[in-house]
Length: 354
Image (cartoon, rainbow, N blue to C red; front, side, top):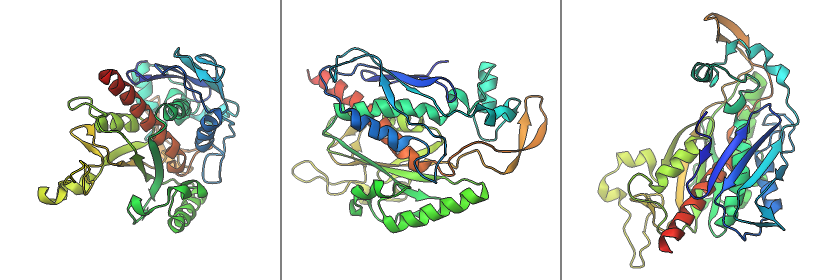
């Protein structure tokens, strides 16, 4: 299986399955001499882990990372950083009924057709459990680019939206509620809606907005390696993501050029920021902001028509412990993938400048 690595200079390779012994990764290219804040790394893992509220999967995983290499006396050595997170609360029996069937909108069918074999326990390698390794690497990447601030938050659940621009929000409130929404009143509505759907055995999608501040001018390349293209690739690799838009996004397609252009001040900053902080594929020093859409979790605890590996259609009900809405737990994953991209481009930029 290819496609298990991400990055150029700051590179992450992940391994492991949802119900295997452990999930893990190897980070190559991390600069030496960085004094790591291990509590900050564990904090990011705790933001992603299951069982943290009644709104998410009740799988109980402590998600404690164990570093195997690349760190000495609390500092990075410049050699590959190997790490694992052990799986401790697998209930593989929940998936016994899936041995011969393919769940609707999951990777089950295409995975088996492509590889001729699949680990049906929780989806194996295609499970969102794999993202725990990304969060570890992203937490380290944040410490490489510590002057850059990355804040992601839930901006919608179903048809419930924040109706304020991000500049009017208090990011310190993101972690004050289970849905990770900085608008407290909207967060209450989101939480109630998710609870109602959970009782019905159904799921719902939503959007996450990410704001990146203090980005230096010059990250990204103007042709194939555009900064927003690489962020897009990173975020679209997260399970359940179906779309991304930067700055004005799709709304910009309805505007005139004279309305959309970001005019400069004499200091080079722009008066508006409909470009979303990136122009010509290169960061311009303004806030980078984007919105990403997550589909509803595919596993619903209702009876649905499913396909068997014998080509038969039968009725089957979803089982197991699943998130009724994935977006609250996806917030730190989005931040992690952004941090990986920015750390990579920061090192590339530094190399070019000498």
